[in-house]
Length: 116
Image (cartoon, rainbow, N blue to C red; front, side):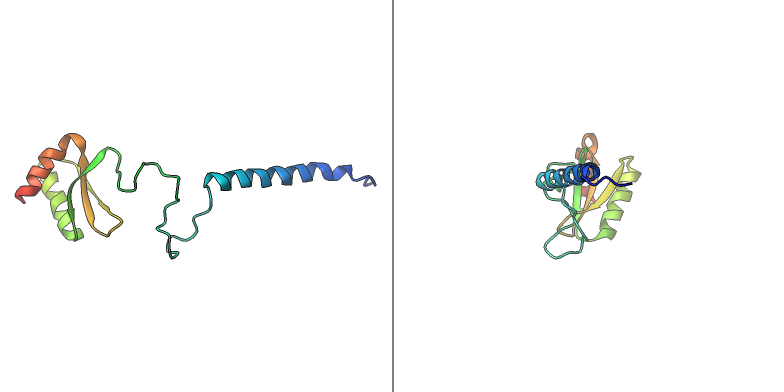
């Protein structure tokens, strides 16, 4: 039997209020949903929250070469692999392809790529 004074509504009202308050705090911190990456005006990254400081920062990896064509990047990566240098590729925001290596191998990799 339900009580007639309305005290049974206090628990759900507190819960809804707390969820709304936390939602407002997270929204203010910049944790908005990013939506579809193909939306106009957005590049698919959440503004303000990133693992790295800049979008072209690859952590422990440094670019040894940058090229317009993925096929050339794959050839450079194979050349570096033949020399015993571990390498990977990443597509930059401008569409070019970077060949990335670890910092202790970047000078040798650039010398090899320069002679390529």
